[in-house]
Length: 539
Image (cartoon, rainbow, N blue to C red; front, side, top):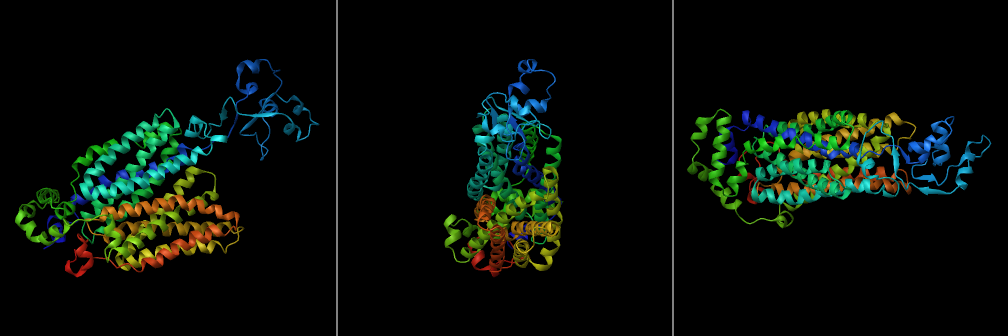
């Protein structure tokens, strides 16, 4: 007997697994909204300089009432490159001569202008307030807006590195519970941040915790579920990301103030923190790391929830020791990050896994940025991304049990790469076909994400699983940062960004064929299980 048999004795897919899935997917939906929040909370509305003739009641009173607001605007603010009021300049003095019908269009450029020394006036028809309007992140300060998103991505990167290692050392549940609390507190404080640097700091802390939630939720689901039910559970977990994107569009549509929006997506994590105390620690991790008493109690508890109390009562310390004596002794052997890169059998898995995570995020963000060309309604766009993602992930569930992990992982990445590369051959005039290829590529990436969440977690032993997942998340964040930057290559050749975005997933998909198939195989617990896979029985 080994852990799969112990899990089967207490129930590998029963009432407990359903309750656990519900408890863990709700925060996944919420954290997706944290990831997407700045599409709305940091939106840049139309704006112009504050000018006395229009925005000061005293000055307006001294102007003849026959002048319309449009006329007052014309003499106060010069025209920009798009022939709209300039967003960053105003006239030092009103240019009344511009009201002369015979004035030329270049008359304004001859007058002295100045920056918006008295601030800006923003169009609040779409959003009553954003971080851009609160801290005037426009004109000379416009670089601060993308900086806040970069700081958030850096938080996910650091969180993935730290939380993965800490979870392997101190347990999945402890780190997960702390991450829930950190997200709730940091997100709430960010909503009331008095300065932009403090806002960025607390968003960094939110992102740090978000990385831990994503990794530990998936690990707990994997380690408490039998091999046959694992694809279903992990697919439903990934569907939480799709629902989160669609819910983000609905919440942002109803809440147009950035601070209220930040509160709306942060406060619910308090509820997750409270009920997370009910969640049991991973018995697989407890037993492998030598915490036998605690692991036995968690197994018996799960047996009771699954209606198998009698089976749980038959589990004793002697039964556990006899079943896992070899795994426990090997599970306590010292392991570290270097083990992933130095151990035969793990080295190839690690490098290919990093390639797959990087390619997924790199291409996803490249395609998502191109999808914005489909329209200016960001609420509809956000809904579209989630709606396309949902059927792709559900379809993956059906294919995982028929095709296996490796072919589906490779195929989804190759398909997404081919869709992007095909767009280099489609003329820009054929907008519908280009959009269809982009949506198909995005759907293939949705399938790839579901598969990578299952496949790569099955490739690494329990003693190093969270460390490996953390490395994968770091690679994904690196891809997310670099993906949009590739668009800058368009200044050399318009098709060059598409060539890069298509080639990376294509090569990564081919590399995935080097990985072993894990369908219907038990989760490896120790490095010995990786090097001698036949020593473990299937779940």
